[in-house]
Length: 280
Image 1 (tube, helix red, strand yellow):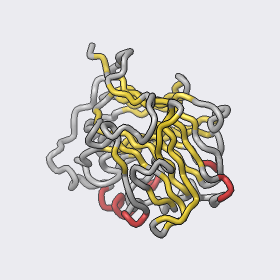
Image 2 (spheres, helix red, strand yellow):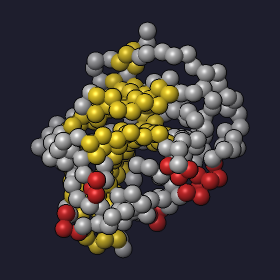
Image 3 (tube, one colour):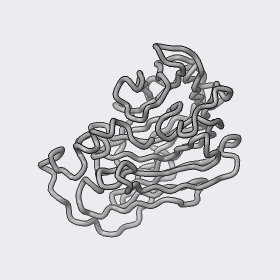
Image 4 (cartoon, helix red, strand yellow):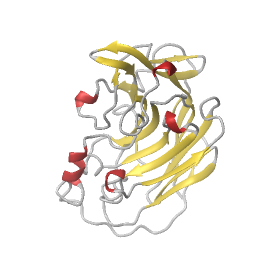
């Protein structure tokens, strides 16, 4: 979801080892290919009705006023079916044009933090993103414990991002202290696919000790390799968790403004699944 915290935090953490003084630079990992189990170790198939399963999901609640750094326009709500509900076999995250807590839009941001945290695996989501200028849906991952410091030092993995002003173009990215958009070094890939907003597609990231690779409908479009030079490049040796949300506007999603005629705007998720690495 690109930057999560305010850019000054990035400037404080980038290029310094103060966030993790007891983490020596590791030896470069040996090249290795990994395989994954054919059965998920964790999943939500959304085969029920009502609010998202509270044994699997929490809510991030609040707004830009919480210090989230993308200048987004929505207020994220909690356990409000207008913004997050399961029906017809899918999770529906909906951004709504309405006045709420001093903001003009509401939405939801589901997180698995503390309920489903992972270190390595195959992370897969089948989703349909909303159309419309100003929408910014994402399925992504953040570190659970932020052991290397504030964003981007502890890392971010974006499995699926889409901005409505560039319809049907899907992005897969990672962010680290050494590689991020704020300093012009972000590691990312994009692909224009047919009917991303009207049909379901499968998005996945394979996260291993030596590489992160991204796929759309089974075709690889992204690769990032562990250089073995420390956490500034590779903070991806700690547990991460899922996030699912729609932002409104923001530094990227709102770069061409917001079309209020497109609301309510809904992202549909057929399932999310995690397949563990098979140890050879």
